[in-house]
Length: 269
Length: 252
Ligand code: HEM
Ligand code: SF4
Ligand code: SF4
Ligand code: FES
Image 1 (cartoon, chains in turn green, cyan):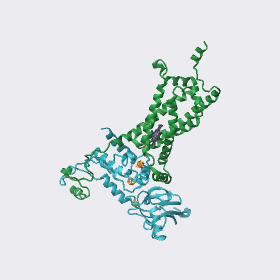
Image 2: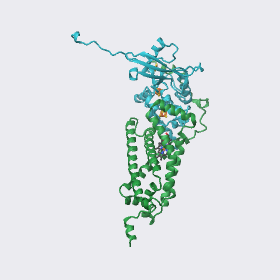
Image 3: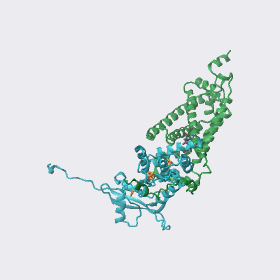
Image 4: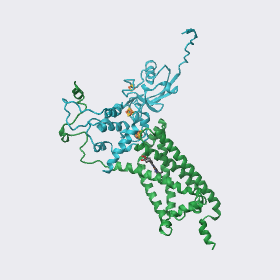
């Protein structure tokens, strides 16, 4: 048996360092300077901020779509977040606080994700040329993610600032008036498509990026992504239509607040 | 058998293939890059390797392209086939339309026509990522090697199947934008040495090599690499695995 031959032959190609290797110059400088841990943290933060935003998005859609049940249902949800059930009287500032945290999260996420945008014309052209040449689904999806993300800078900020600055103006009539009489429905329409596409692609990307469901599930993940975007865009559209309907109906009395049946009954006394 | 009943094999006439080939020689910069069309008759079981050789033999001896093994082993013949990176020797013309466009792999140094210098980049990457066994313990050549579990040897061998063809780099949107990105081939090699018990480097050492945006955190998970790798390496799994390992170090 000449097992040793296996080792002697490649010796010059595969240098195995002697025990006092630390004393020898190596190809890279000995790590007296520890490489920064920030790239690792930022990468994780980027994913985490995206994930939290996506979870918020899902919850948010559940709340606003209660208008489909009845104005009263949405009224109840809106008042719930003002905390009267806990603190005795409503504090709209709580809604401002939530909006501010989402804004902060959005800024963090956008700041981190922006690092991946093509930097400068050369990179921009290189990516477009590559995308058009390769005709590859996931590569094109990323481009869609970049552009919807870019749109969200503006669309999401406008909406969040509204909620932050006028938290008391959330309710069946106040919201419907904002959508219709306030003329914000085109913004919401665009925001809906951008955020649901971006969030759906983002969640898919999270799964493949971190290998969350094992390696062989991409087809199913794509299916889930389509289902996610389709479901939430449909629900969003129907919800937006409900607000538009309500807003048009309420336009002559725009600005007047919704009175839940019980309180309006007490007003009559 | 009664041969009289056997119908003569009526083979349909061979397809006429048109190959649009990107011609450019960096040594003659005054001649602008052009797409040159060649037509040939398709033959049974024809690969692009065969088609290109036929063109070079009968139509244009100046056409430049690389081949060594013509069996998907050496990794020399990667090129863009209708925009997708692929090995010419493993691509059957019958799987393509009769109109085929061939171009050199982007990203790498162009030698001429379809020939690119992947070797230089691969070598640079190997040096940068130090893709060799780093052992501190002295290996005694007089002793029997420590045995390795067959499953582990198998797993290492699986990653070692990479032929450094460069398809994954050419398919990577990140690499097109950021030429210092190590790409799937580089990350796969790190994964391979990380598995190898003879390599005594720790994750800290690997972090030094790939723990930034030109390494594993630069990958945007576009998976072009995974989808074109002619050796079907599970690059997505490897990159995600390394990402998890390297991200963990951010919190120790
Ligand atoms: C100002 C608005 C936003 C911008 C500019 C933006 C931009 C981006 C970009 C460019 C990426 C790709 C990053 C990469 O490939 O590594 C990304 C990923 C992601 N985004 Fe956004 N985004 C924004 C808002 C949102 C919102 C509102 C959500 C919630 C649904 C979200 C969820 C995600 C998720 C889950 C990912 C995947 C994270 C990852 O790959 O690490 N983003 N975002
Ligand atoms: S990983 Fe696959 S595509 Fe990339 S160089 Fe190796 S064999 Fe080629
Ligand atoms: S998964 Fe990463 S390495 Fe592979 S093509 Fe995409 S960006 Fe490049
Ligand atoms: S000629 Fe070797 S891989 Fe194609």
